[in-house]
Amino acid sequence: MIYLFSFIIAFSILINPINAFAEEVILAGGCFWCLEHDLESLKGVDSVISGYSGGDLQNPTYENHNGHQEVVLVNYDSEVVTLSEIYRLFFRNIDPLDGGGQFCDRGNSYRPVIFFENSDEKNQAIESLLSASKELGVQLDQINVGLKPKSHFWEAEDYHQDYANKNELKYKFYRFSCGRDQKLDKLWKNNARTINFWSE
Image 1: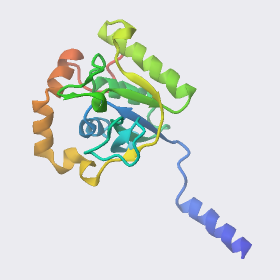
Image 2 (image 1 turned 180 degrees about the vertical axis):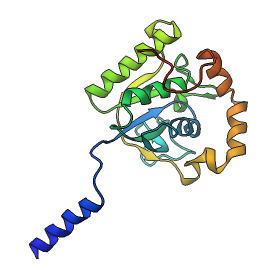
Image 3 (image 1 turned 135 degrees about the horizontal axis):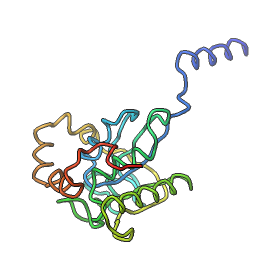
């Protein structure tokens, strides 16, 4: 019986191998609909889930997530895409100079934050702050992106997931009326929003 059980476990791993390169990172950058949409197109990103994190409130909802930021949980394959590349695309799709919210969404819920799990992730996040300040030609203390230790991620309600694809017209209207792309193009000198905007 023990041998049979061991065979079943080994066989299941063989046909459903565990991805040793699966990683995740939590990011806040204003409206989670937009950040989810901006990051999910990056090669190597397996999924992007909208939710809430950073606060103490248990079981937050869209109507009440006081103390939390709107965030996305990015699941990625580190053999295909690096955390540094994800940070680059994240910065290119936010206004890192604005710590009071993002675009038309104001307040603590919408301020940009990078959540780090360990010292390596924190150091990479700091490097991304330095790179952004260099690209924008500003002092480091003008980059208003918070760094927080990773905390519990609360998945948002189903109707928020993949909102851009499920509600294309409403999403595009919201994004345009909020001035997100107009501000990003002006801030980043009309460069395409890709991971290739910083030279090494």
